[in-house]
Image 1 (cartoon, rainbow, N blue to C red):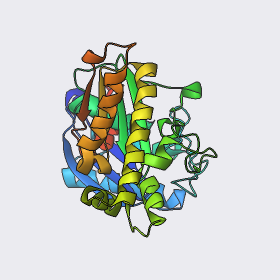
Image 2 (tube, rainbow, N blue to C red):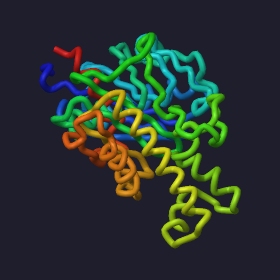
Image 3 (cartoon, rainbow, N blue to C red):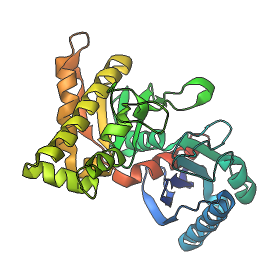
Image 4 (cartoon, rainbow, N blue to C red):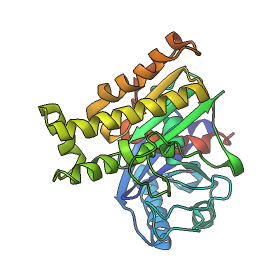
Length: 305
């Protein structure tokens, strides 16, 4: 099969689910599969290998049709070494090497990114980031992920690792965060943070907090207002740090509440006096839950000839 026809396998690893897909160069997902995330690293690796082989059989192609395997994984992870260091959402995986383990089983190049970076790469290939650079993306789900891109490359920190935007301090006296600090963006504006705040009033879920806030419940409204203020504070910091052409918002919470959070980001942009605010847009992620899978798969095409 010619290089132009090569496929890639994308893997999107979250705390509760692993999604896989065979992806073409233009970002089209041809086959897909998903299963629950195993708490045992070796078992998860075996299931990923099996799933990739099943997808190839279903597509009637063999391993040689793949440019490689791209992985987007909930971090912290090290994209250079392949090592997972995330006891928070992937307990039991600490020290596991995703690159080495899958490369050894499938005999293919394996590439790794933080899941937020992978999602932004997906949106850059076939979504809301197309034609915009630099870009900042925020994903609101159980936690909060964030990624930045400049000149077509994701921003990396020391050791090539991913900055944890969800742990920007936005409220000095806010709730304690598992990272060891208090008042982090994620601890206030994520699904888990909203749910935890709502539990103090007997609310059962983040979804219920949003519903009751819209219906006028004062306690629920205060929780959502605080989440939006946290978002505005984080956006202010990111705006003045990265000066993106576009903020992209994605994740399960954004699927239902994009306008609330977009308005919070826009308020910070409109209040800024030191940047060209009229040149900055706010957009909803286009690819939804597929962004990470598509972005991960795109990693393998970069080295394919």
